[in-house]
Image (cartoon, rainbow, N blue to C red; front, side, top):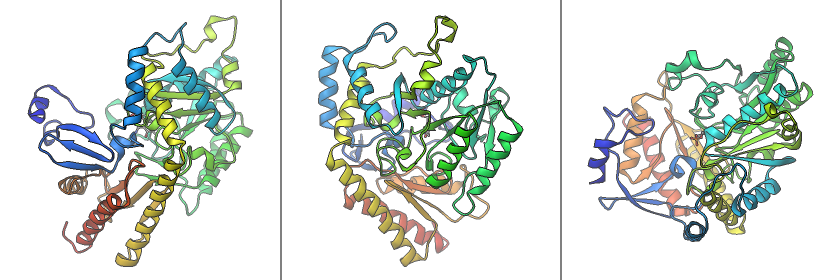
Length: 429
Ligand code: PMP
């Protein structure tokens, strides 16, 4: 049994290994389903930590990756280059919102963010300006490496490392009711820290790990504009929102303003393998050009621009940019809206939110909103027992499916959530 062998040798991410149930041994993936060694199937309603966009083991991506494996599996990316990396960069730069002109490859979402922060800070350093403060949004999450943790909300996850994280300036979350609180805060931060702020990093429109919190494009536009007027670089972390999640290819397409730096990962390879990308405007890149070697961006990972990952990403882009995929994304968005209406009409439940293919709701738990509350585990296991993978963030349930999910499969998920809500409001879960 995989689950027994696993227990002997593996330490799982975000898992309290003493109390966690044995890991479920998965032997196959197909479309929206994962199949375990006991013959059970699960709808992957969270796209395997938000990475999968076209379904598991997609034959088109598998074919392209397989061909590439026989051609070139990997080569060093300093001093060398290859077709899959160039092709992917050319294609990304055409579709990324904003006039970005260079692509920097790395390994995952956290490294894409690390590279983005380093680009921003060194941009100023290379011009002899001591600007190294970073502005972040309350509840933000940008990854688990030290730089990425530093620009994320301080939480139970970061607690053991608090003293090692660099200080950031946090703006209040721009809630729908009074988003001007955030712009006012930004203005006063700028007033008090003039000439010290290097960059503002944000998750556009949806704060993922912070609880699928959603905010308006208009306030983000205003924040970016204020930054631009005050010589503060802007970094859009589209690691979760990129590649169709919010209804457009990139969430930044909802904006009038352009970010200077963009971080991508997760859906970039369709969920096939790990890859990070940081793109930037020409002005940023130019600040690193010099006869002086000290102005180099000294950052790189062994597997930078891995040709297999680049090929998976190119194949995933082929699928994403096809009309069928656009139609699916629109269909899922519509289904989410209908589900929200259904909950409001049937259960008078209004606490829902949605953005493109993302749907979220908060279970009403007065005084019990922590990620670690028992409700979270209860919900997780009861959905799992119904063959649905939903990983609540505290009392927040969200649906973030691969785009190939069918309406019947969405209905299965919605019915399970509705059933749980019904029992919950009845006082029994
Ligand atoms: N940024 C955002 C917005 C994310 O949601 C995540 C991962 N959930 C990351 C960065 C970090 O990505 P990774 O887990 O690939 O390091």
